[in-house]
Length: 283
Image (cartoon, rainbow, N blue to C red; front, side, top):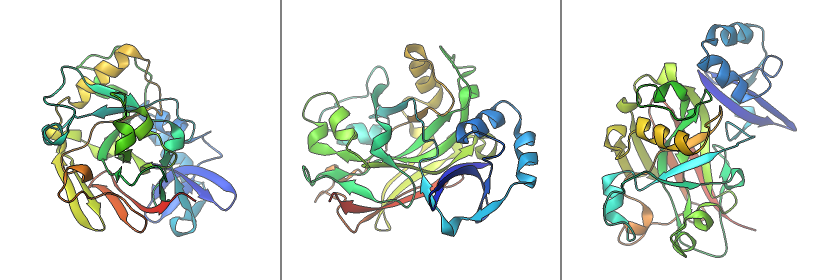
């Protein structure tokens, strides 16, 4: 099941994507998180039943928004692929624990919406990632039950303003410029994805492959990330964890490849989704 939130004219809708339509479930569920919770709690049949009598809208007539609007937590894992560790100037070896930083909801746009390069920097970099979306409230998960908390998976573009990211050892400023990252197009539920370690991630700039990695190459696997994060905070339905980016980012290339107006960045994870955004300058 693919759970999405869209804008249709002046209306915000949430529902399930079927073929080229969105099944509008606003009459049955308060928001996309409620749908995700229902599926994660084993009530997927109820969602399917609600879909049979719900209206549909053509996806060509809507604009995608981030799949969850009222985000409580956006957690991101840094330097979680060996090739990215090797190309990072400030990290010489894999960390002992997951390197966690946060993003704000205002820093994210949906699929098909423009990413905004700020006037303070031309070092606007791409980082394609697999995102975990929490479906069940969990605290202090164990490796044995960690994946039970996952409601679904999504594509994530952790856009980075590199010079601002490196002002200090804290990443926050360079990771939170308004509309500098993206998430979507939807949340693909865990039952549809199946084995999350059978996934392969690619990032493409203007159609040219820049990053490519299997999720089996994560330094800290999904269980380790969930155990660590749920130890210091309660994870709740709709929370998002971006699990890290592979090697091949723009700053490490010769010459560097940064995102500029007119360029297009795509994060492609077959079985999960394909997230594409163009780039504009901030007005």
